Image 1: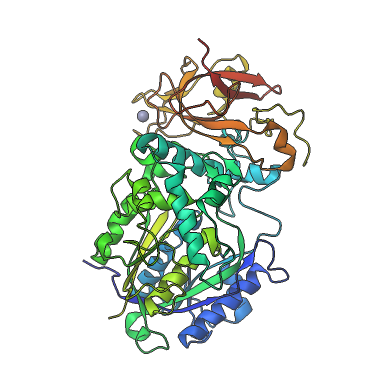
Image 2: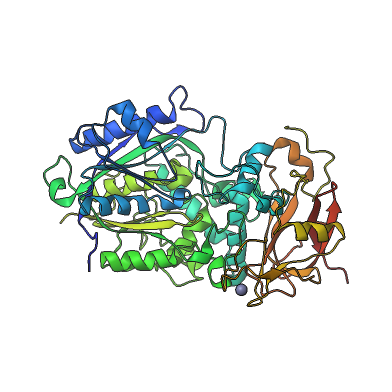
Length: 409
Length: 152
Ligand SMILES: [Zn+2]
């Protein structure tokens, strides 16, 4: 069977600095994208003349604009996975597919983010309305526009931010399995501890379990420390064939597997939808993606040395641990409480950089950067002998995605 | 627009969208709502209910449907208590409870409603609680559905 397993590799990573939300001005999303791309090419020992493809997610940049701005000689591949941050590492698989089939040679995947005036699930009526209308149109510039008929069924219910949505999944998980806030706190605490020894983390200050329980409750059961921060910045990675990667500047990080998608009825999931069947409601939506990913890579959860799990909300890390097979379904809470995700002592170190919760939130790409650094052996909180990394995008509206990256040994 | 939320009542999220933007599929819901009745789109081919109304049945892909009236009661499937307002001008309606309600008379998933649950003690709401629908007639076209604990 044809597969992309190990056929392509990440050879360069480039970033801007990480900024707190709104602090990146006078940079722009375009200037930050260009900065990250040039840095990633430089990291790989390549130049703009080598770049011939874009495999992005969530329409994270406009290849037409970036290509013109940087003078890319010829663009041979320009795709985005649909929906939002869930497609993050799925984009790496799309890049590998294009390279393996000879349609491009050197592809960038990236996110660039600046939140000066607009926020997801924004703060004024306009932002709330935008959330109510999400995932109805499909994002095409040729859409009819206007307010879709479905918006009237959600705009007035007060569930108008991602946090309001993820609380529903969390609450249901607590109801079904007896999961507690104390167990979930472990995600916030362990990520924060990792951030404390990562010089680029935006939230390095230590927190205790008392801080967690004294923190402002945003919406039950999610408190301030269960929420990711919001950040500005850009992260770009360069993918090329493994064969070529072995002659470049950095040790190659092989893309062993990358899959994206989800069960159809997950659909737009929690984003104003909530019609997911019972067996999937209190999940991360990743289960089918995880199965295909492990099959493609020929590894299982016990082979993973470090897991970089998309952590916009702390409990979603717990649920991904279940869906990626690190513990049985429903046992994520006790698994956390037993210290399994801690760097240095746990059975599966998670978000060694501090994650979206405590390092920076560039919609998942910081996790790809951390995986690459772990596999190069240059991470701030290096996992001894790390050879296999899991990276995920989402939970979010379909597609969500998962990838296995590994050291070239 | 900011500040234009009208008179706020604790526990009740205001109607920020006052028009239904209805099409032929959603209009029957809003027509019934005006009369304090809950109807739900229902596949006449396989019997699956769905919310909000949409062109195709996700179970059998049929477009044939009708809008039977439901009892208007249901069960809290999940919820959150919103304590921190999305906008400072919404502070007076916090805390409010909003969640997912499964409707009696339907199969559950696929026909859930996402609603503000009013007239309740936010700290006492539990998954599994029985609730009933109540409509607020806001404008000529918009009757906002909310749920409240089932009395008795
Ligand atoms: Zn049907």
